Length: 118
Image (cartoon, rainbow, N blue to C red):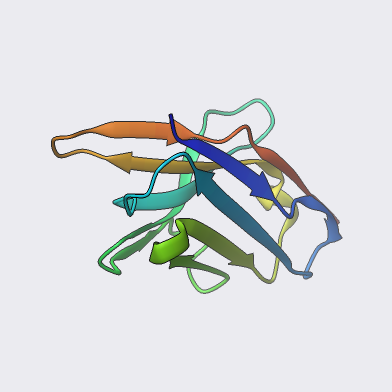
């Protein structure tokens, strides 16, 4: 069973930066797509950014130009560099690893809190 462990959350002032990291364990296979989702208080979980093992990135419009996703395929790690943070970025951030083609899989981390103060 694959386990995803996030780190790097915390409290930061608006305009500041944070870097989230996620490491996968329990597999020697390069995970197909790894990425970050978030759940703001009282709202549904939403996409932040994903990155395939082939290098295709996808960002939510709300974070384009401010957040950068990167990954190390050999170690199955994925990072999210968050700059110019806004109070509306406050959320629990979840790491996800998935593959929609056979063999399919879908793994989630436990989440890490990011709070941006105004």
